[in-house]
Length: 278
Image (cartoon, rainbow, N blue to C red; front, side, top):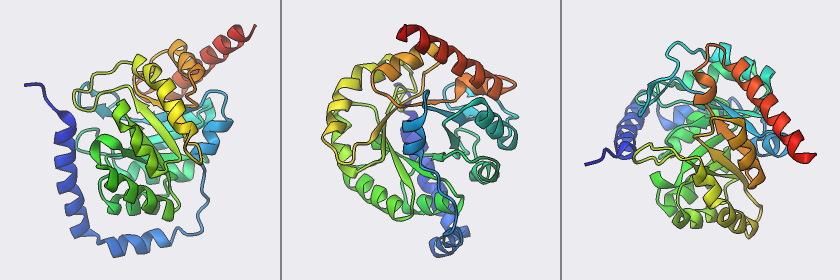
């Protein structure tokens, strides 16, 4: 039987969140989040809409399917590199058990950049939204495959009440009704979260249906393509299909200097975009 990695992750996440609640209650966390009331917020949606490339550069140490990508990576080194190289926004993986991330990676990065930061994790509980706010994230990821329609709607509303934008991740056409949860951005994951198999053409195949679905949603969520984007040609293709955001991590994180890889990638995209306009 093929391994279902998503089920493993969610089962572990439930236990993890309950353990965290015993160490720091939701009320205590809410108090900590309230202290951030005067924080400067950065809109992920606006940043991507204004960017010529829309790259959300991800800080990621490992993957459940591919193992270590960059074991020694440090957010205080990588995130400033990403900003200098031209990223439109940042994504920081905070799942520890499967991705070797930490919420502390986000809190380390926050004072070092003015870019919007997405907390990328498997959010299943309002407690995690309080964590994101206390860590000064600007947006959170909600994954349709992890939540029923009602849960997703409630978490989206709670995130907005906390001043967080929502990136809703979809994978299949039958998840388009989750757009009723009023996300700020909607992403198509090219990676199956059950098997972790990746196919970058998946977002292209869903582009037309997604564009039609978002056109009838007010306000219109911005479209984001996630995972499996390894070359500038694919990035430009996705942009032509309406994706204003491109979430890319492994392609940069395998380098000793992820910022240099991102800079070269953006130059390649710019060259291709200029050539196609001639």
